[in-house]
Image (cartoon, rainbow, N blue to C red; front, side):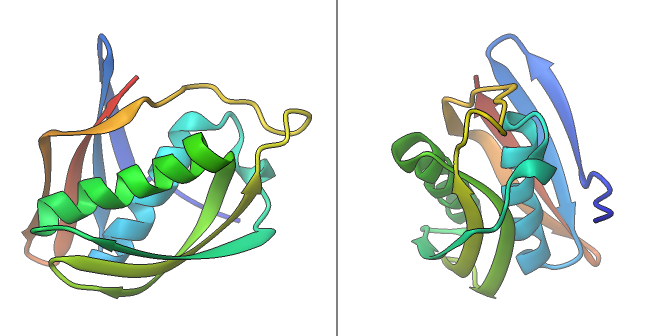
Length: 142
């Protein structure tokens, strides 16, 4: 499966600054989710879409929604051991995103974690639309 990187990352001490792009708001949410797991897992292609999980995440505005979305995905990893690789965004508005994500629980024999992410920081994280392109600037604390 061809998946050109739709993000750029910059490392600063205990933070990773990520810039993700998408052609639509839904595309941006899917690309941001993929970025989280691509940064964490050595080879995200080894993660299989064995289980599907419906998600509905809310925020007070676009920026809050993006951070809450990313934190919810990180919680699925930290709290339940899920590695995710497919992200179907069913609906996205300025304060809610409804999606179905797919992946599997971590298998130490097949999955190697290259970078633990502690949290997604709200400070400096934002979402913008310029012309036809959506951009998210996210801060991952490591």
